[in-house]
Structure formats: C-alpha cells, structure tokens
Image (cartoon, rainbow over all chains, first blue to last red; front, side, top):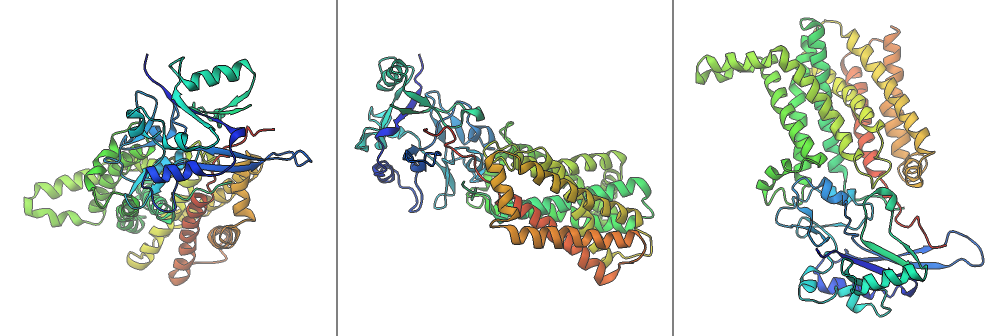
Length: 187
Length: 309
C-alpha cells in the first residue's frame, strides 16, 4: 500500500512557545518575516467565566483536493504519490495564484526567490527516516507525524485511540471540500 | 479575519486595462455590425486603445510574476494546466490580442505598411480584419476577456467575497462601460466627427445604471453572507476602504457620470470637448477603483470555525 503522510496536533498540549516555528525557520532558510508554520491564538466564543484562550498550530494541510494544485498554471504545485503537496521551484513562475487560493493561508511569496513557498513536511528529513523539524522540536509533543496508511504508525494509533476514547477530532474547513490531512485532536 | 495580500495594485491595473481594452473592442464591433459608416470614428478610436491597453495590462501581470523577468521561458508553461483559470486566461488573451490587432490594422488602414512582402499581405490582413467571422470572434473573445478578469478571482473558494457569480457579470458591464469611455476620449482627441454618437451614449448611461444596481445588489447579498463576506463588504462600506469606496468609486466613478449622462439623455446637457473627456475619465477612474477595491477587500475563510467549545 502507498504511503500517505499526515500530521495530527493534540491541541490541548500546545502552550504557544513557538519552538516549532523557530525549528522550521532554522531548517528552512525562509525570508526574515515569513514562516511556514504558525500558532494561531483564539478565544472560545462563549464570553463567560469559562472563557479560554486556545493555541492552534497550523501549516499546509497537504489536501487531497488541493486548490493550489488546481489553480497552478504551470503545474509547479503538485500532489506527490505519498500525499505531500509540493512546489517545484524550478517551474514556479511566481504568479501567487496558489497563495490566494489556499483557504488555510498556508503559503507565502518568497521575494528572494520569486516563488511560492510552504511546508513540505520536511521532505529531506523524512527521506532519511527522521520526523519533520517541528515534530522533533515540540517540547509538549503536540505534533504527531506519520503514514496513516500504516496501521502500526504512531499517528494511526493516535487516531484509533482518539476514536476509542471519543476525543474530539476535526480538520480545518472540511466544508470547502479540500480533504485536508492535518488532524486536530482535543483530549 | 485576514485580508489577502498576495494580489496587489499591479493585478488591479491588469484587470482594469484588460477590461477597458476588451470592452472598447466589443462596443466597437457591435457598433460596426449596427452601422459602420456612422460609427467609424468610434470604431477607429476603440481600435487604437483595444489591443495596446490589453497588452499593457498583460505587461503589469508580467512584472508582478516572481520569476517572469528571470525565466521568461516559464511563460510557455502558463498554458499547461487545463484546471487553472490563469491557463484559460492566457489562451483567451492570446487569441483576443491577435484578433484585435488584425481588426485595428483593418480599421486604421495600417495594412499599407506591409507592402514589402508584395500586395498579397495587405490584402490578406484586410481580408481577415474586415471579415464577418472576425467580428464574431472579437465579440466572443472580448466578452471572455472581460469576464475572465473576474473568473480569475471568482473560482477561489478561499475568498468568499470573490467567490460569487455576480462578479463576472459586474466586470463585463464595467469593462464595456470603461471601454466606451476610453474610446470616446480617444475619439474626442483624434477622430472627432459631427456624427451623432447618441446610441452609444444611451447604452453607456444604461450600463452605468446597471452597474450601480448590480453593485448595490451584491452588497445587500454580501451583508447577509458568510462572516468573511460580511467583513469584506463592511471593509468597503464603513471600514478601511470606505473613503475610496464612497468618494472615488460610488460618487465620482458612478453617481456623477450617471447624473451627467442622464442630463445628456434628457437633452439638457450636451457634452463635448474637455467636459466630455473629464466625465469619461471619471468613469475610467471608477472602473479602476472597482477592481482595486474588490481585490483588496478579499478576506480569507476563517480557519477556526469548528472552534473548541
């Protein structure tokens, strides 16, 4: 069976330390003011005594039906066999259409290279059998990465465990039909 | 809410100029089909601006590309993805540019400059530029060019304010209106005759009225739309873009021309010379700001709607 890489965030563990953002920045030489992964902060919508602040990591969702792949005129953005959405920088013309097409605002324009950029699940690292930099670095073990087609992988076990224990599991904006591959889990 | 920042004023200029060029040619071809003799001055004026403005618009798109300058051969790849609206647009604009160039050569009598190849080349150019099928191809590709400038934005699910069917209709109407304005200015400056342009002026007035109604309808609907759409609409109505929206687009770009052209329709005002150019220029200003504001008011879908309770 083909590999299908995905990531899960156990969101209640995130403390907004931004170590993932720093690790990603150290791994990839992105322009000074840009990041491939972010931590978004939000407040529970119920403005009551139980109001809480939440920290939600996000990055490219490596969608199965990725709008960026659909709209890229040169086919520089493409979906790999292993489920990763990648950008071939050699043929990216820098039209920025993929950036405005992404419902997750996960892409940015690299002015130094003149191309669109985003998270690649640290392709060179996973080729060597390592986890992505953000996963390795996260002190709270928020991020779990792996092959969801492999029943023995850590992410498959986590999703099974979440189903068994009725944890809340969701993905971002599934109503848009993009079929994203980042799972949010709240225990 | 997050405003998109990838598409800037360069893109707005491209959408605007492609619209003016295409709109001018569509209006000219329709006038050509109706009564070529009477509207020849208008047709010539539109031919002067049609293809050049679309080309300048494409140049703005080109300089906005991250790698267009360094790797121009990548432009050939713009045709390769049949699912990309940019690929559709590249094809449409290429066809329209070629057709409108041939039409301009025919209308402006430029074929005589091609005699160096013998008499056959001018005859071929005039034969193509003046043919009936060329007129139909120009109407089709011209409307497609004007509509495409909105489809480019409209196909994106990520930005609800752009993702609406009204946008191509609005842009086609606006393109025809600004195209008529552009051609009328050039006609006044270079091709002025005593022929009455009354039917074109009447059409122009109704196009502006239609644009006002369509824009109003869009806002009534947007205000009842998803939160991101409401946010975009509010940013124009009373938010960060309100001054440009109300003063430049609504008042100067739509209401003032509408009132002035209405007075012209009722026979109380006869515009010509500098005054005509001024009010037609206001329509162009409104046309640019319409695109500038819609591009900049684009807001991404909120990511965290399924928020933790």
